[in-house]
Length: 350
Image (cartoon, rainbow, N blue to C red):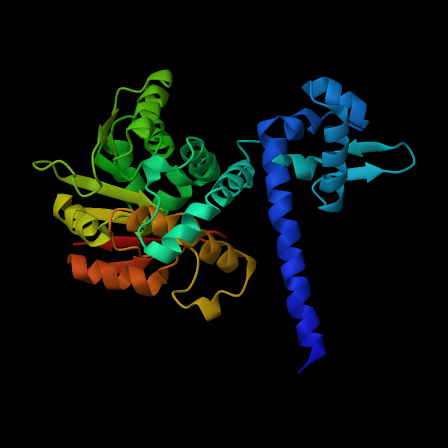
């Protein structure tokens, strides 16, 4: 037995243990406003931060020490003060930053809380329905994906399809399948005021939030439908249909893709994003691949299996997407030249 490899395996687990606890403390810092209170505030002592956030100083001090060890914030031993750098704040406190991770902290910590239910599903099958998850989970997912939508969706992602932006600017019919709380739908509504955008999601609380978001933005070209993803309204053909990082979660992804195919205009395009990973786990031995494979049984797979669904799991890769597209009847499948650390994007046509 190679003891170097034994030690390597053991310390890999220790590192992951540290990461799990760091994420839960990061969630606390995010939800209690500690990161935002530190952003731009300069050097702070623990008592000052506790006073600023109206939290218990002893807990704040220990939280600060953990965040220093995790390299989330900085510490000056000469003055016994803690500081968040501009770069750290860009990641941990700025909700509009393309690299904001508050949603990841929130989603991870709350998903871990389901470990006993997931273990029971290992024994008996089934899963946890999306509607049975912690009520914060939809908010966490919204915060996880919102930075990408507000920074890249309208220009970079949709702009990767030649001629599409001009078509949307002139006025087109758009459907956003699996729209969640409506961030992507509303972004498209604001970016393309001459187009009409329909957001579709089966989760009632999310659709209610989406409608409020559109109303607050004063948008009249956006509407939302509470329905299963495959229940795209008949009788209307869409120039663009989008689904961002949700097909693999669905109970019946094949039916959804067939419905999308049927709802597209003859010259329409379907833009579909999936996690940026290979269909083969051994090719995903990197932080992003490790993250997606670990999320799968804790969220993406279980919400599908809870309804006796396909349970594709988080990682289907380009290979899985191509296979599903062919079964749904699409004749053209293109991987778009979009460089994104977490997602890959496909353009499909009839």
